[in-house]
Length: 345
Image 1 (tube, rainbow, N blue to C red):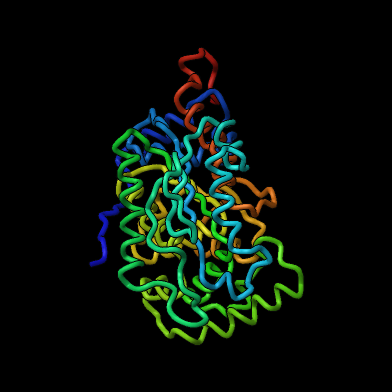
Image 2 (tube, helix red, strand yellow):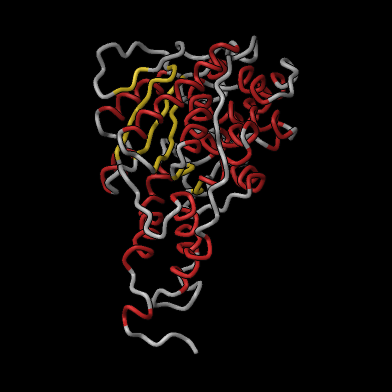
């Protein structure tokens, strides 16, 4: 049975008080730009003029994809488990950025084609050893898709119970840009050619092959509802992020949305529960082709545009200090009255 969530808009009763608090700081109104918008959003989420970001955490979900074996990526599937080991050993970009920005990091085996038995500091939530190739059959069964959503939700529920109220998501899975391209093509009824990018660095020949494979697969599983699309073409890590986003929104957590894959997951979360985006802050604009398009569909305004397309939650980790700065000025900056500075007449 599909898990249900209770997600409502943030209460706006505090809106005028928050606006006054922001506007009467010792600065011209609006002069801190996006920081003021972010402060307003977080204040509304937490229903306070003194919001706090507690135990901020990046959760990286890793899984393999059957479609990767069809040649949609220049990298072999083994890179997924090798990168998970790199995360656990502290050697990846996301490790460096989390350490540098005082973020906790959790790594989840959502469905990697590798046995991690005995691996320490890994959240074991494996649904299976990778999905099936959607060029031949549905990627997941209905039960596997529902289980992945539930696992993602339960991981976030546990973090919330331990005091986390700010969460970001990352992913690792060779082939998952191809998977995301298929998902958004199906959900938004956009030609697959408009959704496919270079992923992990495909050259022109590899990109053409990727497009041909996905175009062939796009007609194999006719379906229109959100869960069926996710089941037929999705990945275990993407489905888990859908559940994780929905649980975080139900818990009224601040959600840092990373790049192409995580934004695709948000697209599906919003298709199920439209109010979820009220809790989301868009970290950056990815270098992946279709990311700007789906941000536009969501109405998302990214904080950064650094040409990044690594994944792993790196965009969210890099953007976090800016989000923290928005809370810092709201809490610590003096008002005109406090500082004895004349306000505008």
